Image 1: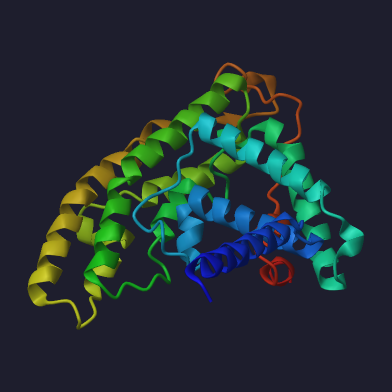
Image 2 (image 1 turned 180 degrees about the horizontal axis):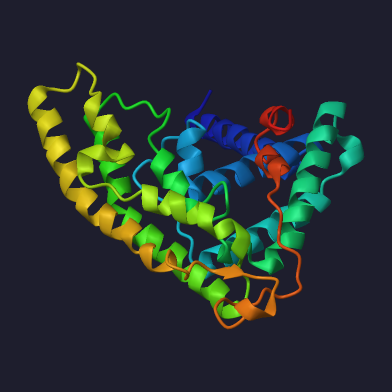
Length: 295
């Protein structure tokens, strides 16, 4: 075979290969593939937007940070949910397996309620009688395995982020006060007790310091001391962050009262229903976790 002939054959094979790849690339994704990709995209977005939830879910990519909770960040998430709903509506449900039809229905339900509730801007009430940002951060080391120096350094970075996180949340509270979107006054005393209970005299008394009392043997004594010292210094800023909530304690916690006598002391709540917590929201997970999380 002459060299020109070999070259011609080589170009022919390359042309056929390129055409074959182009044909496969042009084939549209199946309904199941579209749904799985959508669920994966939503899950990734949730992990990125809520680092605390990511860590608790075993996703350790964002262990060094806390959520961004500015009004602009919530606007971005609301637009994301609208886009997820648009993509979901474009998937042929009839072409899915029975299991994926269930996943489709659950995700549709979740997005429907998220998008319906988003205009109420519930982020203006970031704490309630039994939960809130001030409680979430206190639990951010619970059940989290720390086996390396990197794990502890990520945790210290997260501690450093507490003041900014609290500042954003208190700004949201103040926006709620300005708008008249507030808590019922009857539950405020219980919240005050929780806030007061979070004022610790020393860094080592705080739940934040607990991980620094249980280092694994794989971390040297010198590194343990360095990490403890760093955590103790960071704790001073953390105490100032929780102290920023103190002005809300003595009769200034955003609240509403049904009687007219309190209207001059606390914002009046507008006649709009409070957004309720959505347990089913946790179902927005990849295939398999979508159904399991609703059990």
